[in-house]
Length: 176
Image 1 (cartoon, helix red, strand yellow):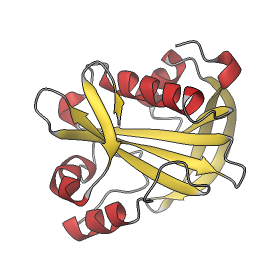
Image 2 (image 1 turned 45 degrees about the vertical axis):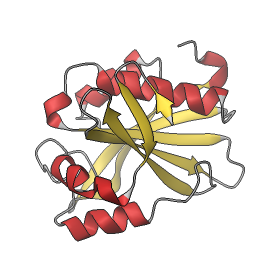
Image 3 (image 1 turned 180 degrees about the horizontal axis):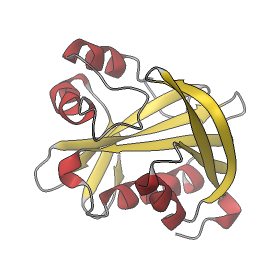
Image 4 (image 1 turned 180 degrees about the vertical axis):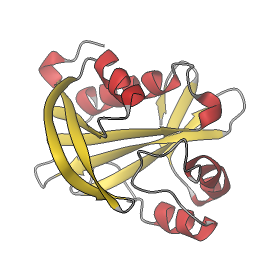
C-alpha cells in the first residue's frame, strides 16, 4: 500500500467495482480516456485483468485511490510496466469529478512516482496525454515532467484519430 497525506493507494479489488463504475463511466469527465465502461460487467472484467503482483513486465497495474476520511474509492492510478527489462513505466490517473481541483491527483501521482523510483528502482516514468487535456498537462508539468514528443493522429480512440503528447521524468531528475 502507498500512502499520501489524504489518500492511500492499493490494488483494485472486485468490491471496488460499483464505485469505479460511477467515476469511470462519466463520459464528460473522462472524455480523454481510452476506456469508458458501459456496464458493471466491463468493470468486473477490467479488475479481473489486474495482475496478481505489481511490477510485472508488459502489464498495466491499477491502484485504487481511497480517501482516508471516507474510505471511498475516488479514483485509480494505472501503471504500465513497459518492456521486458522493466526500467520504464507509463502512468495515468483517473479521479472522480467530485474530487477534481483539490490537488489529490498531484498528491497521488507524486507518491506513485516516488514509489516507482525509490522502491522499484525505475529509470524513467512517462505519461501519454491528449494535447487538448490541459488539466493533465498542467498536472504532469507541475510534477516536473518535461514534454518529449507530440505525435500527430497516432491513437485511434473513441472512433477518431487523436494526437498524443509524451511527458517524462528520469529518476536522476526527480526531486519531489
